[in-house]
Image 1: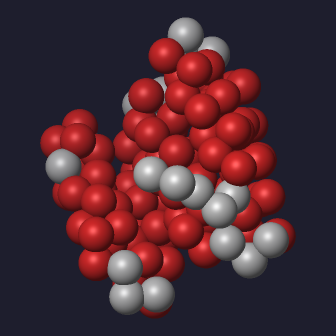
Image 2: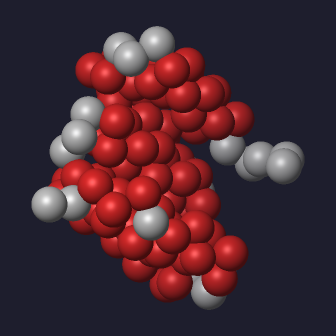
Length: 103
């Protein structure tokens, strides 16, 4: 998928790599940087994707409630912009893997 937010995408890729290596602190910082860059540039899609990346990191750290909260935030952002595919992805995250680990 072509992206209009290359810096944000680079940080998302970095977050995924650090998450794969279980370097959670660095993965979280990279995901947060992706979100912040896109948010600052007004790229709501990158903002939402960065939020979901942060949720993935928190889920990997077993911070389920925080991960679900972020997924819901991303879902709201996608919904606000009528992006049904993104909204479904965020909803699936919030009610799928994260919800199954809760309690």
